[in-house]
Length: 359
Image (cartoon, rainbow, N blue to C red):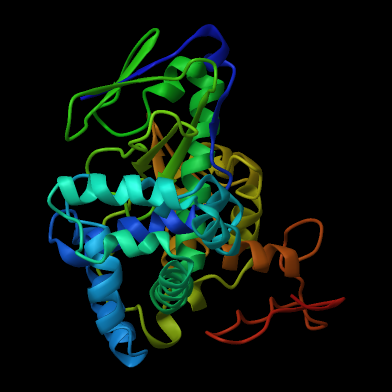
């Protein structure tokens, strides 16, 4: 178990990450590639990732350079997930390069003692080899994570929306019970499942919660207690949807979106914290059952993400849904043509054009 000890000052410095952390996602996704544990929500990604790595000629570099640094279980070096990664992949890779050689050596020695260190690990203290490592990480990220950026962001936004509602409804106590299903908050200690028994004392530094698309099972924390405290935990994934007979052609979900009511339903979810089914029904002027049906069609079309929150279901727009709302103008309703009919939705790869140009 991991026991995180808070002071009064720490309770004022708890925050949820603003966006997915690319280097944490790199490390967590490498776990998904090398073990079947927790793979079910990512099965299609794993198949596609292997094909993309093969096409890009990255199977060898990933196998020889990245996988040895991120064992299937247990410790992996903290310098692979620097705090700068919160600002994006470029900043994160610069953070890896800026790590002091002494720290790199210390963390590689720890990895080696844990039984997972490669024989060449000590050479990462050299700038040339670490530069090669960052180039491989960048190539891996661009090949297998960047193509899924929209879905990762949509599910991350849904998680943040739930966190916001949890904080509003249940206060900080509620929020601190949310990182993983086994989290237990008994002030001033937060206890979460962890592969080893340890204590982390925040001592006024606060805690950054990082929902992760690829993390599964127990939350993850940095091994060095002197670094900025973070807790990476799995966001919840919807179960895979089974396609229905009408999922293709004119009877598919995209065709079902045409109409003002669903535009109003989509618009109702555009607040920073999303909207429950009841809130959608009130905003769109329909019954709760009708709002649920419309939200399902929007979700199947890739315009909404839905997540259960307490006794309600919270809906938030995906990046594509937000693009559709932006194209619809300030009211969030889809613009209509001169004939009064809603314009057709864009197909994959097509551009949505607003009155001011392409978005």
